[in-house]
Image (tube, rainbow, N blue to C red; front, side, top):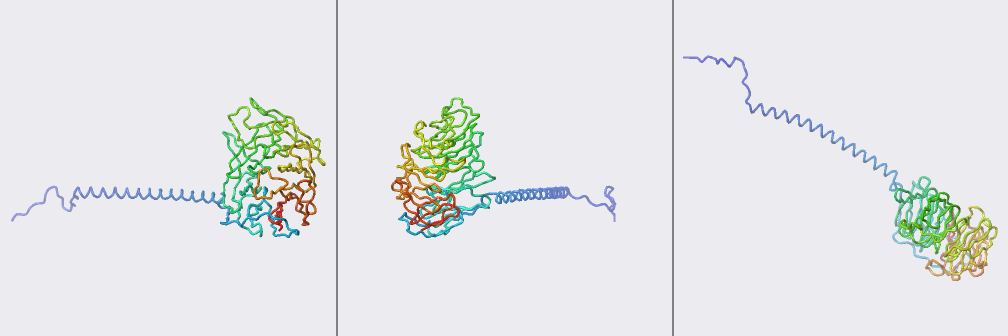
Length: 451
């Protein structure tokens, strides 16, 4: 029997080489493992980046929430406002219906059956008969500069960083938000901010906010600008608005007049159109000025059929022609006007009622004479007998109400004599009197309603 000898290429104890397919499979597995490790690292990095982004967004949202209006605002509305209260004959003996430490809104402070009041950070609607809250709007991060009630719209002006430039409008009956805006109108590269606390005047169709640099005339219904006035190189001292326009006093030093009319240096008193917007393409009269009395230091008082200003040096009321600004008359005032003292005027069909330094003057419609004078601690109000609030009320069919040291009085619109005195505590300084129902709203701080 023959035994096979071992092959020369196969050594004793050697391991057979794996097939090529197995080698390829092992290499593929190793590659997959390396790829998996890289993918895991990539996913970890990706998820970490997503986490950082989400964390950043969360922080940003938290900051915006904490600093924004949403986090600091509470608006409570009412679906049905209190029923309207008609004007009736005043009670012979007034009784206090309610009182609130809140201040009362300016303008006509009630609408329908709601009286508008405000505190440091809130504006409120109250049932006019009971004083109960019906709606409220609060911003804990802002201070209320002023609340205005005008034709069913309550306008709240808030202070931010010392400037009264944030405005929110609410429905006077329900408190529902109407519109919001800031007073920093941008025109081209120029910003027109309201710096500090502006003076505010209210007419039926516009509210004007005046600072030394700019005047905003705002439509109370939608918050849009009726017009803006910002004379370069001038300082605005004051403005009033009426049926004939806006009467403005200013002093100019560095104006660039070019082709513009009604332009020059020094003190000035001018009448601007009350409705027309600024026309930048009008190179001669972009601000729609009707006339400008150069060199005049008079203080604006009224801009109605009787357009007038006070000459502080002479202690006279200067009545001006609406069309050209020519002087119609100079009416002597009791005691003149102290510097910075407030003035007020109400235009009617029969007379312009002008209040200056504790005296009410009734100026005849032609501006030639005084029909009567009456001592009142604040400007009187004129409330028509009808519910309609006309631009020019009929004086002889209206209630003229004012405050005196003796309480509330109504004046005879023909003579100015006291028609009736209601012996209630003297209203606070500056408090105005508005007939309401069978009593009165004392617009002051505190807010008081008599029935």
